Image (cartoon, rainbow, N blue to C red; front, side, top):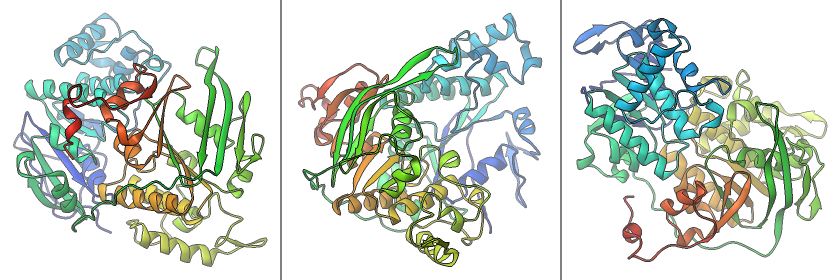
Length: 506
């Protein structure tokens, strides 16, 4: 199977160059090649007009290429300075000289990094700036940013884009990989689109639209989304009342992680939970799934108390689960796709018939999921590890939706998937909701939350602090509430208060 074929991309010095494409289009392979993690079979790479061969990331760094991965690679128990100098002690030592260099870079590019603070004490946006500073500290002049806005609220995205403009103004180059086409158009100077491993277009933001970019990515015209209509009933399906959970931090201090969490989801309802990562959303999901034992409170499924029911029992009772961390909780990476199809549903058809596992039926149903959800794979016998992250996500979503659960607990269901797959997953959730499924939706994508939810709640420091009508709130308002700056019931301001309320870039 060929991942890249005749890729042709030219990135000008001192620009932000966006790279977009569907899952499985070859973006990750291309970036691994440019960062020295994978060697191409043919073709050339030139840096500043000179052909280079990159055998390792060390070779890439030596030639001024650095990469900031989507999943941060920081040690929480170390300071910002210690994280930055780790592995690069020969450059400026580990003391005062290193600190001065970190401060110089932070000031020069407007990063606002504090060298002495522990990483565990800073938020997601600050961690991302530390990752960028790590790369700059090692002398990078070209930065590869992989999905840098995936976990940021709108205000943090604006701050990141300001940082990127500072980098560009100083002559640095940024390769920006994203599935958020509105953001791509806002920050990029040029955009390269790849489809099925081949370059299909290079355009500037001035000559294209999000819809045109999406259609270049998928190769077909995208359907027009259906008008929202309420499917919410009066029948409670998942009831959470007075939920409390404590946890021990890195210093051994016991702190309250969830405090008095109470909500009800009805048949045909999507309840969206918004919040900056690290404010208790993950713990809430794991408690609902039975992976954590709460200190107090009650969880009911269709009227039955499941507070002490094990995870397997909750799954068998009708709770579907799309996990936040697909590698840790959603897949066996070294197992074939058809075996991954059975995870969490071993006792259900088509995976079993009474006490017997039915591998043949599971294989055939995996083939159906691959076809229906457009999972890019040469077959169902390859391992889950061989798929791109987006295709792994589509497999999980297909598996969970196939059993039509009473409740779907969906944590970031479209994280890392392309625009075509995102639309498809949204349509699947809307269809299941129309048929009566209840959904607990956790997402960092505010457009996803607003577009899918019937009810919105905001979580801040382990509490539900605000509620909103998705039809009457802007992403900016929601982002403000997520930072703790707004509580209660949120309403959309009038046009005089909100100049952007009359339209959208998308």
